[in-house]
Image (cartoon, rainbow, N blue to C red; front, side, top):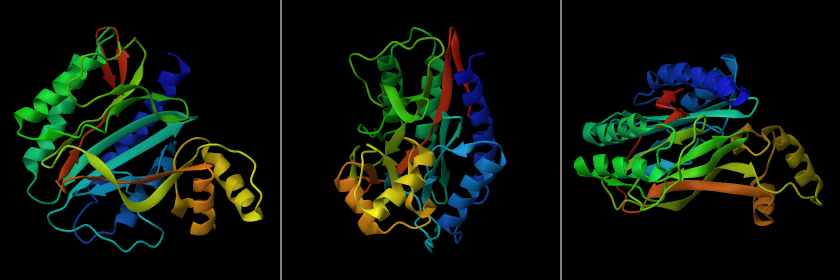
Length: 288
């Protein structure tokens, strides 16, 4: 077994246990921050490190939401909660997501789960990702919903949460042929809205984009602190001291990349399901 597969599987084992425990804690009245901090701490306790901040996207929000420091927001009855978590071992990443229904969204949740399972069953060395997109698209539409067309599955490489190939959640004419040993995340997003996400004005997640020299002492101190995350995303609440002014300066200069919350353009509800898999000669090994 090569290093990438061995360490991805170890990260996946950590995620399976963490996700299983976290799901049981998501209830009305519980703080979002409590869940995020539990997930990130538990990943470390189990022998890995977070590959990105714990994402907890609710209702129309689809991705890139993580609580801010001292966040008081709580889950509510009726919420549809997407828990998206990642772990890495020496930079080798596993990524998984599950939807927790606190309301009456069982069909929406089932659509993303069935689409995920359908795609995984079709994976083997030599399969074209266009076929996976066709299957995902078909299952979602059978349920009467739409795939979110500008969110995708993706490859996983060392220190890269989103690497080639892109795996679309809708039918395309051409894709990429998957090779044995490829590590990918299949990630259907399903909505009863318009089928597209847009950015909204809330950002708590960043990553180092271009570590070029900076002039201000506060900027240099911040960059020194975030070097530990390499190219992986981090949460603003993870930083010891970082003013919005300094972070925004670094974003404008291209040193940092910002990840605004992505929300459904038509305010539709969103479900998400995701597994990391390793492509094998005659199938796929699910690691999360």
